[in-house]
Each structure stands twice: as C-alpha cells, then as structure tokens.
Image (cartoon, rainbow, N blue to C red; front, top):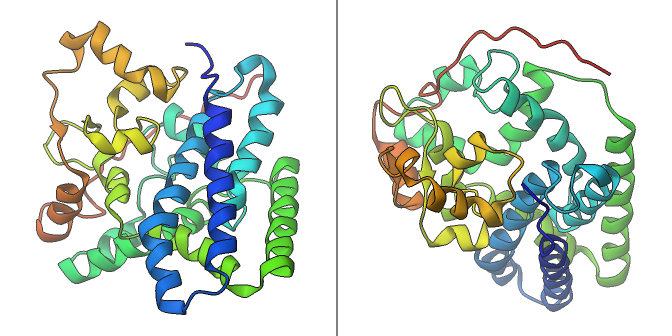
Length: 287
C-alpha cells in the first residue's frame, strides 16, 4: 500500500499524446477524425479515466498529499473534454463503502434502465450510451452538493477546451469529445464496466480479468483484488494475486472483455438488472 511513483509520468505522457493528436487531426476529414477518435483517442481517454480512478484512491502521491492527487486528476481530465475527475472521486468512495447499495452506489443501474434496456438491440444501445448514463445517473440516484473542487475542475476544463479551440479550431475539440464518447461506449475496453460487477454466475458479484488489456488500463481487471485492497495502486495488484493465489485463482474470472460485451447483449439472463442490490445503512460522517 504505497504510492505509484510512475503514475504521474504515465498521465503526463497520455495527456501529451492527446494534445499531439489534437494538432494532427485539425486538418483531417471528419470520417478519419472519428476513426482515429475510436481507434486511438478512445483507448487513451479510457485509459485516462482509469488513471483518474487510481488517483481517486490517492495512488499517485499517497494520502498525505491529497491535494496533489486531486490536481493531478484534474490534469488527467483535460483530454476527456468534460469535467469529470472531482465528481468521480466524490461518488466512487460510496461505490466501495456501499457496494450495490440501493440509492447509494450509483454504479448500479436504475430500475428504469433495467426495464427499458432488456432486448439485444436495446442493450447494445445502452452500452453505446454508457458515458451518458454514468454521468447522469448520480444526479438522479444520489445527488450531492456541488463541491469547490468540482467548480475548479469545470473552470480548468472549460479553459483548456477554449484554448484548444482558439489554437486549432473545432475539429480537435470534437476529436476529444468523440474519443470519450466512443472510448467509454461500445468499445473493447468498456467491457470492464460490465465484467466487474454484473452477475454472470449466481452468487458472484465481483469478477477479475487477467488479460492483456490490463496493460493499458492500470490493471483495473484485477477487480476482486482492488475491492479487497483499494489502497493498493493498480501497478501492485498483480502482486496481491501472486502473494495469495489461494484467495483468487479459484474464483470465477473473465478471459475476454469483448466476450463479456457479446454475452451481455445476447444472453437473456444478463442486462442492467443483473446486479446485486442491497439495503445499506448510511454511515455517519466523522470529521
């Protein structure tokens, strides 16, 4: 349980890569811009959201320098195009504290989502629109007061978007937004959204994935390990499994996020309803 000293440099490299891409796409035809937004930008932006996930657990600088982590998350947020990092931190704490908690864990789809997106075509649409559901669901399920950090996050993001538009025009801004919408929607990496907590086997609500996509997702596939030890940075989660294989190797696991998406769309037993939902008592906030 120690900070990952390489995380800040990885984030810097990913942000610079997207800034370079913004410069390169400024003269592309729209069809090629969307192609590269899906094939390249989608991977980078999705990776950055998972960097923000790790940073929300203070993985970059440790708990003793919380402000450093918050501002690094805001920096990692820049290519995403919309302010996201501060709000994610605020709600992700509840996901760990109240896993599956009705009205508390906003990772769990609403009843309306479960009722509406119940056929293969509708589930496919739901997967494609995941970024919208993830951003709007908290406002409906468990709204919280806007924090100062969220306001600062929004101001920095708007300034960055305006600067890119002023320097290179509309296409780079569209490229970044498309990278986020496509990369977090119907994309191979997005299989982790479904793989982590949807009940593929009755009685098992959290699953790990140990495949190669972990290399570009900060080992988010090691999800059982992460929920056991959320303070351990993604770079060290494989070590947890190596140290204690008797606790993890026998558990059901996923071998392909693409297959996860395929099964989710086509299997009648899977859908937004396929989540464990429990009643949780709201913990007291201690200062």
